[in-house]
Image (tube, rainbow, N blue to C red; front, side):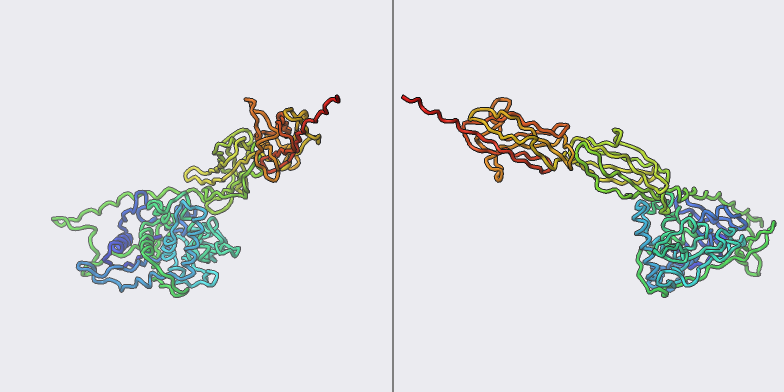
Length: 570
């Protein structure tokens, strides 16, 4: 496209403007342009006579014409520079219509939420919007961000442009014979069918809406795992929009200009660029047409210059052979096959008691670069931590393929016996992996109730053992609570649970009295207390048992004084 448009160029003195103008002038005279970064496409692409499905179909715009105005100069004339500098219009050119600016910034934020690794700057969208539509014709959009009439490029009929036959039945571009670039960001219909977005929430993907178009452009530029903070990736992204090095340099000039500062202006009051010139097609053998090249400068007298400078003796030099063009960038993966994001698919809090099965299962949803669900994508889930928690089957790592709705759900988690925190990480993608990490925890086994299994009174004489054993049962939500920690404490008053220093007691391994013990229920939730002994202090005492989970039972213990024996009668 770019090789078929006669560029309007300003002469300038600053480094950026001179470089861009020089490249544009070279391109207009069929001279090769220097690449910006290694791997950038060199020169403009030949498009006349191309068939649908050719290289032009790989460009978002079909390599349609674009505005070639360059940013205003930011430094005054200097000695030795051009005397034909344009008037300084920096403040006006830096103004971006309010709705258009809002659409660019919204697109940046949306993409940052789904593809933060792309690092899309809104100023890049502004630069492309400037050269494609003059910021949607100076911001002539309605309250919803839609242009009052469609912005259409010329028919891509092979006459000076690519030949791209109709792909949408004229639905977007009104042309049922050939495609045309459409809207503020100039998408051809076939590209819009893949990348179109509904960014303003009206239920439509409208290429003539600046919000929809800006988000579509952002996602398109980020395709293929690009990081737009890297110069080479940014170049490849812009070249995928229009396969022309001159286009890349023009966009980059505006990108740098907007990065230096912009301001908001009312809709409809933006600075309008000049219209791009259109080549005049001329017949070529085989019935196709190609643009008429720009005429060479005439010498005084009306004759054209010779092909090269004169040699001594009256001869001329041969034309300098054209260098081999740098191959175009490798095509990026189709957006439907490119992982865009990995998000939580509704996983709730991950908590379980030791030895239990987690009620929630970790679930994620994969989306492609278009935001659509991505099926058959391997997602790996990994447990990290020291609680002993594993996936069902005793594995720490499992891989699951996502379903048609993009969801991938890990097997159930089985809690270990150690309480504490751990994490589950979901990972998908290879070139630029996406990860989600979930916090999880294991709590100690609990009981919400504990009771004696019998109701016998517990009585002992001073210095004797309580003859009846004490057995209790702990439950949780009505079921036996196995492995629950229970603390048994002998106190004088259950309302003041301070360990007693006299009265009934347990015995340690050394035979010394113990009045506090840590115990655990068995597999049936049962707890049989060790033997209890009375000391020489009669009275009523209490045994308090408290479970992990807060359940409590109080048992009364009685130490009876020895009966006095009447002395024998004399």
